Image (cartoon, rainbow, N blue to C red):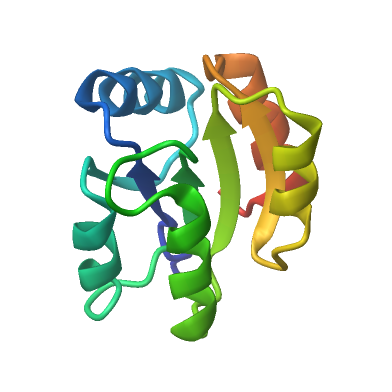
Length: 126
């Protein structure tokens, strides 16, 4: 039986960050489907049609920030694994992220090939 290709959402309000993160993931050799969203509300709407296996999520975004996005995921009873990929080095943000059961890791930008491989080994079935 053929193994399903995992689906990954990149949710960051900066298009260039999503582009770079996508290229880093592709360069790591990991096989997955990738959908990018600059608008977290669009990512939440898309969950009604396609639930990703993994979500790489920024914290600081306008209108809907990463915390509100996580709360929405919980309300939707989403089972996606979330990796926070953010510029925040705050211990408070790390602790807040850890309080969400969906969050499996916290990575400070920029995302690197080495980090992607490590995340894959620790949390993923790519």
